[in-house]
Image 1 (cartoon, helix red, strand yellow):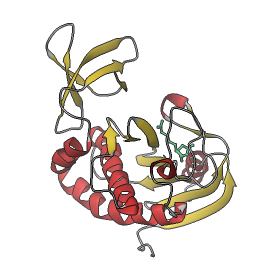
Image 2 (cartoon, protein in one colour):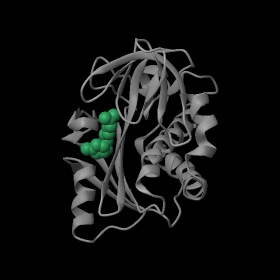
Image 3 (cartoon, helix red, strand yellow):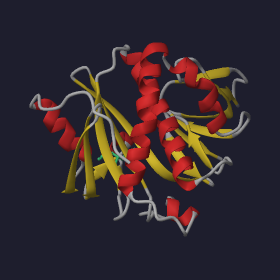
Image 4 (cartoon, rainbow, N blue to C red):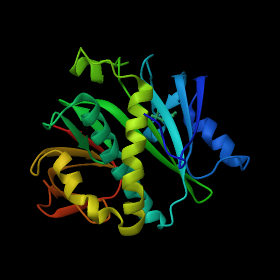
Length: 242
Ligand code: BTN
């Protein structure tokens, strides 16, 4: 499997964080749309809210740069469509046709209630940096799961999964640029947990409880709030399934 000329891939044996390496390149003006940093080993990765992202050996860590034409509001939904691309690539790699692999809004990839992949979207100088980590051969913490926990017989390498993801993403990205999240909304809802699922959402100042209802055309989550019995729009937050 090979990749198209859209991507300019730099593979490193070991990095502290692919995200930081890419940011440093952007800072020096040495990155462009499609520049992708891949690390075979990542020693100090981080996730959303600065949380530590542990990456055991045999897992996939990469970050890539995009310069979307769309406005910043829409850029948030780019992380949702990245999640769709990742689920499609994982399903394809594992030959999964059921709903064992799902998306937890905004973009955690879950297998049977445990997280197997995470996506971090940051912006810098009109660019978007998307960092992705997938537990393929090992789950570094108890609460996480790896693809080989799901299927002991898989022989998938990080490089194979990366190339599958890039193929899918390349189809998705132009469509998202042209039409935004709206065309991906039905697929997101199909891959997401079911309507009516009880959720707790941790916001900067408080936590809201409710039932998951929908994702709107911009990619915001809508929940039926337990306290108010009204629909509440969530633009950012940590979701816990209860
Ligand atoms: C999350 O779930 O909070 C997002 C995790 C993102 C981790 C990836 S691994 C590759 C890239 N480099 C980093 O330091 N973080 C992201």
